[in-house]
Image 1 (cartoon, one colour):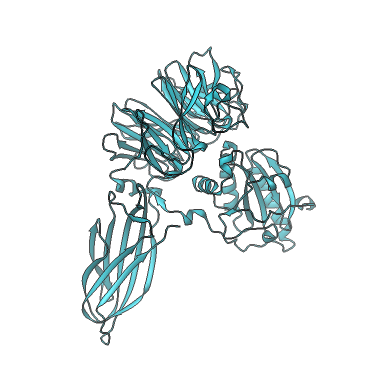
Image 2 (cartoon, one colour):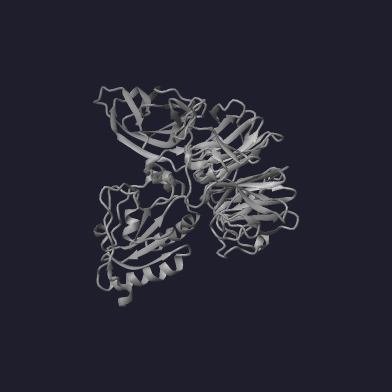
Amino acid sequence: MPEFEGKMTAPDFPGGAEWLNTERPLSIRDLRGKVVVLDFWTYCCINCMHVIPDLKKLEKKYASELVVIGVHSAKFTTERETDNIRQAILRYEIEHPVINDRDMQVWREYTVHSWPTLFVIDPVGKIVGFTSGEGVYEPFDKIIGKVIETFDAKKLIDRKPLKLRLERHRSPSSVLSFPGKVLADAPSNQLFISDSNHNRIVSLSLSDSSVKEVIGNGEIGIKDGGFDEASFNHPQGMALDGKKLYVADTENHAIRLVDLEKRTVMTLAGNGEQSHIFGGTGGPGKTTKLNSPWDLVFNNGSLYIAMAGPHQLWKLDLKTNEIHPYAGNGRERRNDGPLDDASLAQPSGITTDGKKLYFADSEVSSIRSADLDPKGSVETIVGGDLFEFGDRDGKGLEARLQHPLGVVYHDGAVYVADTYNNRIKRVNPADQTLKSFVGTGEPGLRDGEKAKFDEPGGLSVANGNLYVADTNNHVIRVVDIRTGRVSTLNIAGMEKLAERGKARPTAETVELPEQVVAPGEATLTVRLELPSGFKLNPLAPSALKLTSAAKQSPEGAEQSFKHPQFPITVPVNVAPGQASVQAEFVIYYCETQKESLCYFKDVAVKLRIRVDPRSSNRKLALTYEFNTP
């Protein structure tokens, strides 16, 4: 089968580049014996996001024979930074090696022209084929299968696993995970958070920030039902109408309805499968496939949807449950004009003043408007075009943003989450001016008057405060609109956020070396050693449970401690023979200067004990020491 053997040698990766998800830099030679897929991507790109599920399916099917290498060739300046790519890897749950092609060297070597572009390389380092765009699973499944068959016959397939060092194994677990959007509602005293990477919606009390509801079981899925059993897939924007909360269930390509009174979730539009129809035609909600709905706004009985995938705005009539494109012809660019003839570019945030829709058109780094009058038009208020971006206040097309994702209208202004500039800005639609509001522009987490954000993605206003989903910081920020002072929201009742589903990771288990002790009365001292610069979060419900067992009494004895203060010393009584003590820690900890940024760890530490009459020791020590990655 010579057609499944390449002729052109694949260019190797440059030296000195930074790599992620691997313990060392890789070369094409290192990958001999494997079928290799190179995925040229940039983390802002919706089409690149759509390829990731296909790659995961291929990686699962050909787990022993295939290696995917992500080549991150950035579009935006911010995307060149390795730390930002690391965050994107965690957000999109990528588990293959990624090279930071910061200077586009690999891009040029492979003569790539667009994102995403993918190459197949055979086990001897030759290029078999390539393609650009989405929908790669079926064609790549066929070609990879044939390449494996061809080279298996020559005994040239290496099925030894590639050693990886995944970024997720080096990152602490946070109470919220990449929250994408936020919705504040003063009349109902609620703050809704799209806890996107925990696949759920969290409802807090606006007045005291306590957890009211957790909507979704934390697992990826599109299951309807009660709050405890329903499932989402990386939800984003929300809209509220009385007791009905609507959710853009982005990676399920669906619109979900949360009935806050009945405490149920149901699917209104989309069926969990992505639409690949250019432009789309719409139809009945439940039978119409959608494409990455990213944000919602409610107006006069309808939902208006920032449909990022097809580069359009859509409208869902809540009386008829019919859904159709509303603005945009499906071509990715910035062209103003009549609603159905204008071109948009990955709209990702939407709001309204009751007369116009305002939306963040992220790939053209612009804030644009669409008339609510169906005979109206699309107009660019501020910003540039596909490759015109920056960080510049100003007027109209001279102003510059960098991949904005969130907007909210309030008191004559549109507040903008200028995501890649790590700022919140304010647009005056009347005179088309853009002005920075809060944020220094440097990534980070700092409150006060010189606040720092890290890729904020969603905004909402209530009671004179601007609420910000500070995505890469895994927190919600609160901006006093009058003073511009920024604080970080302290969530009360965090234990409710770690009760079920993916939100609470599987407990780590650690075994300590055996200790010898004399029989009879002894003491056990339990210590917890946090890394330098961290402390237990005083606002969170850390806990410790001690269980002791001996061969003579395997049922064991238990002691529990809430809000433990370490070290803890307890008396024990041991008889000759073998015994053990297990300490189960649930630890909420934070940086000393950032109590609001809360991580947690669930770990079981086991200490084996040998009770020896010849020993004089009467002190046992169980110490758990961990470092943040």
